[in-house]
Length: 257
Ligand code: ADP
Ligand code: MG
Ligand code: MG
Image (cartoon, rainbow, N blue to C red; front, side, top):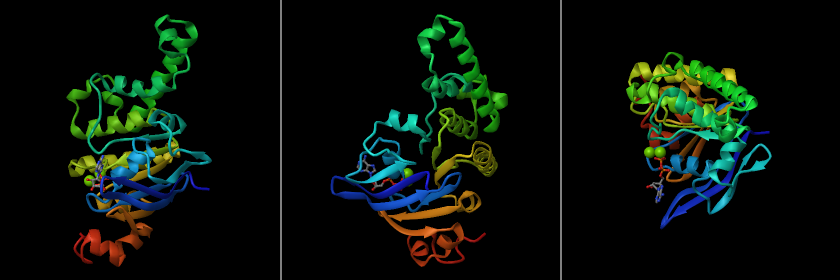
């Protein structure tokens, strides 16, 4: 059974159909890429999946749970975490940003921690330990106590990823994780996404224009254009698909290095 399933999802904005009965599934432990030209509906799809937009019709499921209609925090609690196309980190250190994610999971809660009740202090320590592990996994171990404002762009993008991972998601939504990065930062992000999938075993839905990254990371690809699904298959299959070449990737040869 798929981990995530999107069935016939339609989203309309005044006079515009941003998603037109779009369907796809994400298999457990796999990376599924969602690609297509600007305005195709990729971020809109993420906004539906994370509960920010309610679709006009269609259904989203995480395993057996129906996500459609749930508030964003309920969806996050059920196991769908995301990053944004435009970077979203808060002030403070890397540790502060990661602990924001952990506080959501904290059972003892802030009050018990503030009172320094032994159980709460133990739990807090465990959350900090886990945040540190996730920082290591995302290549931020040495930056754990650094102010985010002092980090490079590539590091800050990985802080955002690490914070999403601190929610212990089953499905991770990555919206253009390497946009604006240089070559070295892109490579680093690709390695981190590989490591995350291998070590945490979660499913990833990846929106990305960098076809090199898509070819490297994705098991399956769905291609959108003007809100419609125009192709689906392995990266190799969609790369040769005539409709995809026409709408997005250019004539054969153009995108080959
Ligand atoms: P992509 O991420 O594939 O570049 P988007 O999902 O951001 O595309 O946008 C798809 C279409 O929906 C675009 O035409 C965009 O202008 C429109 N759109 C997105 N969000 C809104 C909104 N909140 N209100 C009105 N139109 C929107
Ligand atoms: Mg865009
Ligand atoms: Mg977008």
